[in-house]
Length: 170
Image (cartoon, rainbow, N blue to C red):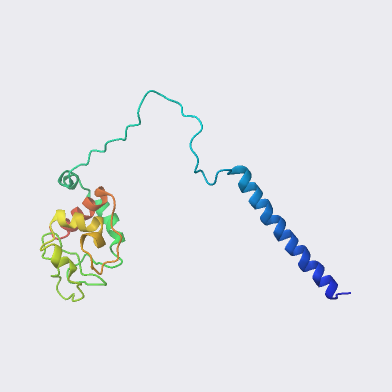
């Protein structure tokens, strides 16, 4: 009952079904995207009489954002950092402890010896402004740093974290 001819028919029908599927896909793409994938010009443009004007975003100075920073929100954002850093003095983890980091010299956490040296070439002490620039893009601010964190894109989050870190040591 199950011979070579039956197996040949099954394989042939599967190949035919696959061929029909591929040809159908090709025909549908040709029908719905005749010139490629949106590469053509728009057929009709409605003139509204106005030119498109890009919104100008007024950038608020960091000092202003830092002055209105929320320490409680900073503690929430610090949870992202807590996988590698601790907020208690002398408690190093993968990264150095961050207790008293605001105003502290770079590469100077007691008991932490795994500094890459990239930070001390860029900045001497952790001011709020240098912390802001570093937390925005650590790899871009200090190329060669061993910190693998991508950064905090929102200026409010950075200001809140810096205010939280600054509040730890009064």
